[in-house]
Image (cartoon, rainbow, N blue to C red; front, side, top):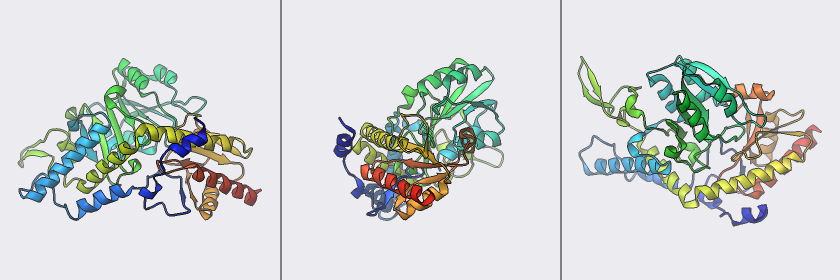
Length: 393
């Protein structure tokens, strides 16, 4: 099937997204995804018609909302091949990584990579871990051959991105897990950029922790997921209501996982909205989404490679993300001029300053795709970049 045919056969779902106004080309899904009407409706109903607190009410609506909240947990767990009791709701991937970094009983050495997001660097530093860094391959993937040489029995944890938020570099998680297991280390995977565009089965991956944020998966902000089959081995990170078994002034005992990690009133509305987002993605089909985004990435990379002024970063098989630089033009200027043409991209260091230093640039321009993007978005970006070239030529 040709690229043009592949793009035509993928359904045009833009009408499902009220935020995508006519003439606006949104290419910043790696930062946050637009929301389909089904997710908006689910959150509005949960906030209004169906609203009540969960777990503690004895009245009917509270019981119904509790059932809906726990059904959302089951739905989201099933999406990643997990058991519901191994899924804890958190505020986002950042909180999930902080939870593991601070709660882990063996804070020793952690192996990170050059391409990690700040949220997979700073929490380990703050929690007192000793950080080692794995280099990248020439095309911008985590160098697992180097990781194999770096890992020792002193490492308690390996923490890698499943897909880089800057380069779109996919990780061979199964091999990373094998290397971690070999030295007795655990593996945490940041799945923020993977879950919206790749099939994920945590049991098959072999990792010990998998984290992602809801808002990049077409769901609400303020909610994320920590999956682990080791939650019962972690002590609570935050204290308060709901996460307890019994409280006295002398001693408190805690609820089992995942409840012990959900102190206070949970993100009820957001959980229901995230379950609706999972429903939406599965309706379109995650394999179809991945194939569609690969086609868009290939089209854009091919067009950019023909421009002498453009430097492309990342591998050819980048997943949904294309980062680039234009000679003599700061990415912020690129982004500003593109915005005048109705094209929205991201420009900056993308919360990955060590990676920018590795690339030898202060920042990059980044286009990232979602389920709603089509070939006209790529065309608008290319036309906008031609205007940038004329202005700075």
